[in-house]
Length: 350
Image (cartoon, rainbow, N blue to C red):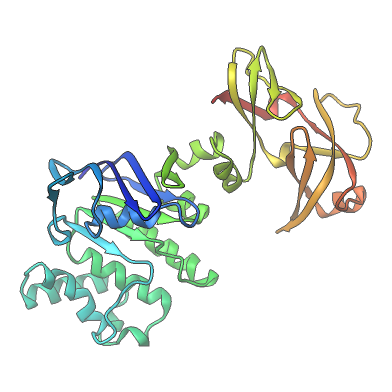
């Protein structure tokens, strides 16, 4: 079932404005920083919060339209997995899962059969008699997912489904979650602030910043062409703004870069990957056409590399090996020359 969402909702001084389509058979990640409105999107789609203008259509059914249409949550064919899982502490795992179909008016027998089927599907049959305080965080996440799926919804909404897990558990549960949502025929929407979750689980990513969609596309499209500083930071690339003309980018804030897109004209964005930035103590004599001077602002360890932030025009981030750091003897404030080959830069119209 396709969801067409074109609405706005206001909470205190925060306004959320959404205009997008969520397609059936597609896993969509709503990615954004804390306070951007991600969870509000899910609450509105689930029917737990109203809208102030616009409409939301599930398939052919208008579920929200101002001023008078608001279809109740239980009538929307929506399954929800909340961030804290919201399991009922006084019910067993089996009873928690059966609660969903029971709340839709199904018989106890049918509800228990669905719960048993979900337990088996998720490989947690042995947990059926336990209470929520007797299972792990990863198991609780599976139970919450089973409860949502037991209603046989057309739409599955997940609010930060992996946020409550430790790093070791998160990896295994992410793999299990991927299997489950890949086998779901309906529309899957999950919110997250973790770009890795979005890259690994989603077919499509909607980026939300300050209550507004700033970019949407496949994970690879976002990685190749980030359109905001937030997305560029998440993807680990340098995003440089300027005005392009005949292969030259006049950088906003100062500086000039040679770019390979010679036909590009006007306001543009350029992506330069940190691994394509080379650092030198002396002005380089090589073939790189882009050479400029700056100073080291910060050094940050990251796995087997060092992330070097450079104050320059344009400012950039480079990644270097530990041995290169030792050879260059870098520290905060060290003067440094930066170079980047033209072909390593991709510029596109803003």
